[in-house]
Length: 138
View 1: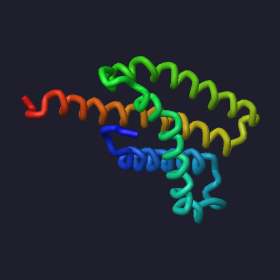
View 2: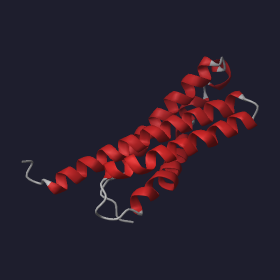
View 3: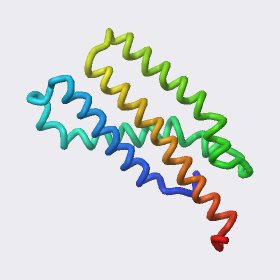
View 4: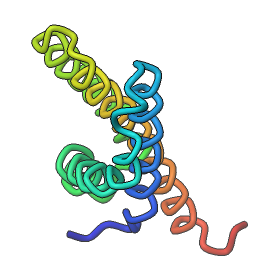
């Protein structure tokens, strides 16, 4: 797969965002005493889930594009549908779980992390495409 950006910084930012969101929502629900030792260890599974979610659900839109389509065009064309579908799926699982706290926190975190990852990926790709079309910075 040939892509012009390195995903490692985006995955790390997404994992940090997901960790902060997850634990902020979980602590606000009053479970701090029960789970405080797990906060540091949770970074590993959150990192794995974020990388899988980005690789499986976001990156195929950019891998399957033709060369003449910009990152902005992909964002404008696919992001609205993606966000509607992601919101619907997250809402469905939250409602199906009868609003269980852990499920609500997980899917709220997943939704916002994926939406922000789209923005980060498109911003970096747009910067790379601008640099490629104007290499001298003129």
